[in-house]
Structures are given as C-alpha cells and as structure tokens.
Image (cartoon, rainbow, N blue to C red; front, top):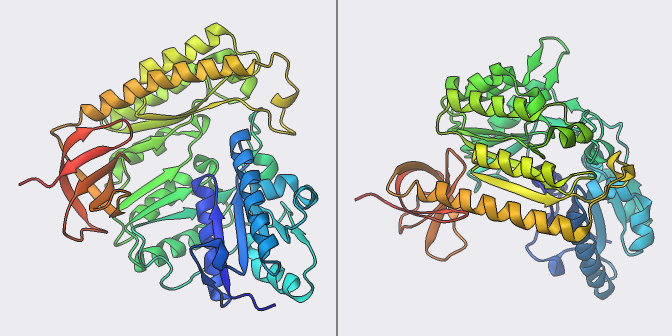
Length: 439
C-alpha cells in the first residue's frame, strides 16, 4: 500500500503536542503530507494520555471512532501512540483489533522503521521499550513557519514516583537531553519565526546533564534565554521540592523569562502530601510562593490540585481550600482522584465515594472561579504587553497572551501576528481578557 497522507489526533498535555510535532516532521521528511480530516488520510495516529481516568476514557472513545473509520476504509493504517500505548501495550490491540501499531513515547523516533515494516506485510507492530533514549532532534524546514510559539522537550520521564502518578511507568525514568541538542533545536525554531519557546519536562527543575560540562536547569534556562531573536521564554512543569533559589532568581535576571510559573501543589494538607509522597510540606510550598512574589511581584501562579485522595478527611479538604484562599492562584487545574493501575495509591485504603469527590471538586472550583474572575477584573484599565499568536476562535478577532500567560482577545484589522503590542484591558472574564488598542 502507498501511504501518502497522515492525520494526527493529539490528546492531553503540551508534552503530547511536542511529540505530535515530532511525529509530523518525521512523516513529512519521509515524504508524507498532513491532512486536516482523518477521512482524507492513509495513516491515522492517535496520541494518547492516560494520566487520569477522564483522559483515558476520551482516548478510548477516539480510538473507537477511528476504528469505525477504518471499517469504512480497510486500507487505512491506524496507530496509537503516547502514554496509553505504553501502559496498555498489546492489550490495546486485543480491545481494538483494527489497530495496526502501538508506539510508546520513547519509541516515536522509530516511526519510519515501523511504517516500513507495516507497509510490507500489514502485521501488527508494538514498540513500547522504556530503555530507549529520547529521540534525536529533527528538523523539517518550514514546519513552524506559521507558528509564533513552540515547545522543546528537554527531558523525559520522572523519578519521583508520587503515589498516585503513572508517569514514571509510562514515560520511564528521568533522562535529560544534551544541552547542545536543545540549543540547536531552539535556534532552529527561532530561525523559522518562532518568538516564544516553552521548555518541557515532567519535572523541568530536575534537568541535569553531567557528561562533560555540568548543566543544571538554571544554567540551561540562562543559555536559551540569551539566544538572539527569542522574545519570550517559558517552562513547565515544575516540582516544588526541586524549585531552587537560583531558579527563582531567574525571574529577576532574565528579561525574556515570562512572569508565570505552573507549580502543582496537589493538596493543602501535610498528611495527604505525605501519603502522596510529594516530598514537601504545606509550609514549604507557601515559602516558595513568598519567594516568587518577592522577586516578581506580578508573577502569575497556576497549579494542579486533586480532591478525594484516599484517606482525605473533611479537615484535609478544608486545608486545601485554605491554601487556595491564602495563595490566590491565577487559575487551577483541578481533578478528582482516580486510581491508576500499578501506582501505590491504587492499593491504599480509605477510598472516597465518587459522590463526595464530586461535591468537593464543585466546592473547590467555585472558590477558584471567584478568585480567577476577581484577579482578571482587577486588570481592567491597565495596559499590558501581548504577544499576538493568531486569530481567535471568534471571527474578526486576534488573540495573544500576556507575560503572565493570560489570554487576551481584541478586535483588529491589522496583521499583528508574531508581534508584541500594548493593549489596554477593557474587560476581565473568567478565562480570558478583552483588550483594545489604545488611541
């Protein structure tokens, strides 16, 4: 069969978006071209997430829909990649017999080899080794030509083994990429017109390269920041136990480092944090927030939080609400705890009823919505610098983000995409801002 067109469906986090970009560039260099609809493709890849039960359910639903598409088009090659592919392995093919290939996140660099094998005999192929090093950098000239922002994965895996988390089991242990590769990749993005780069890792703070000259995350961040043509620099995700004073100081020292940090706290109760094996206390987390706001008074702080962890008492939950009140996060990603197969927490006693988890989540989200709305409304009348990223979902508007990672939509007839412009904030909404060009 002649494979010409491909379609990639990305589900989950920014790391998956980076992996999908890697796969797309590999396929383009292999002679294939991307299409916008799976119906037009010869190859469909579903890049999955399985960190939480909801993400897993969405992935199953998508695989089911694409399996129906394959029944209509038997020559279609259907593949599943990413964290679910790693976790479920051959079990995915047993559940969805029309799947042709299963590739874990450490194996995406072998996509051409896999396609050559499957194109020859159409046998099922499963590649899920976690011993493989992160794939080498790839360049597809012009791929990012219309992109204002881009991602670079600086490391893969995680060594923390938080009791609820499946990441070490599906992404493997921590492996940092050579700094020279990262800098070359950053220069390549900038040369194609990318103005903002986000450095990615399950725990970027623990980046470490010791082959030859020693590089910490802070030293890498300072080098990337100094690249000519880079207007803005971001990173995610940070772990509180590894957030050093030197790293915090970068928010003062580096002019293009955006004043925003995503710092998951997960719970406001020390007893819950201990059972989660997070490696820090409530008091330590609060001290980090104080340090961050000392060096950067306007820094936006976002976070992840979980409700209903096994054994979470009403007092534990109130401690979490109290922490949210004290810190006043700009926004929160909030979730109900769900068992992840193979994790320590799966075997824990004291599971919380689903109805109670839903109730606690609703209370927490209502609290945070009020905080987020007040903080955004407080920006009304202020002038803010915005990097324009493209057209908004609403017709006739452009959209961009402030250095604090707030989305601003505004009416404009000019093409400011890729430029920094000053906007006056007219309205603050729950999840975005409305801006106008000052007269």
